[in-house]
Each structure stands twice: as structure tokens, then as C-alpha cells.
Image (tube, rainbow, N blue to C red; front, side, top):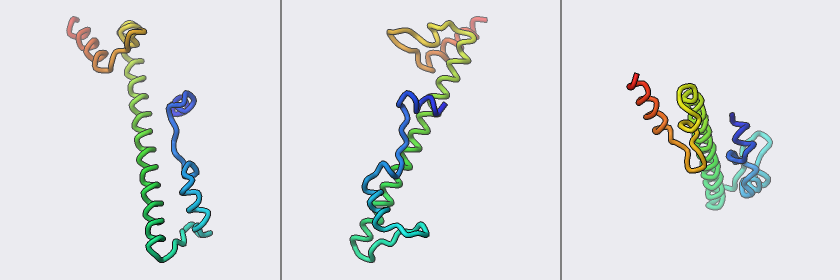
Length: 115
């Protein structure tokens, strides 16, 4: 499912290579053991903090993108299940609008209560 969203351009995970700043930090201060040798000064502290905050924001972006993918997958799965009981129009709508999951749930409940 993730590939589907990547193919249609809805998913773009930020890589460290997307940040020119992080790339420059890596080039200038990275050590062969994976650590960073920042200067022992105010500037070094600022660089450490900036690197940390950028990486933290990138992780938040990845988490939000994953939540979005999960939400889309849930929506698609609910619509597939509802299509077994409801009409295509009731599940997928038309050019004037698409029903929400709440609308679909309400239609399903009404159908169950009528029986």
C-alpha cells in the first residue's frame, strides 16, 4: 500500500540527504566511528542543537506521513467491506462528493436496523 501512495506522489519521506545543512554538518564533522566532532564552543553547541532539532523534525514528519498512510489504508479497507453491502454510489459517491466513513457507517447501521 505504501508503494501506491509513493507512486501517486502523496508520500515523500524526508531523508537526511534532503537537508543541505545536515549534509554539510556530516561532511564537516562526521567521524569514521559514526560520531560527530563538533568544536567545544558556543558555535559547536549551536550546531549540535540544530542537528538534533532537524533530525527530530524529520522523525515527526515521518510519523505524520505514516499516520496518513494508515488512515488512508483504513479508509480503503472500510470502503471495500461496505461495498459488499452498499451500492457503489453509497460507498464511493460521485463527482459531487465522496461520503465520509461516518456517512457509510450510518448507512450500514440503518440497513442493519431495518432488518
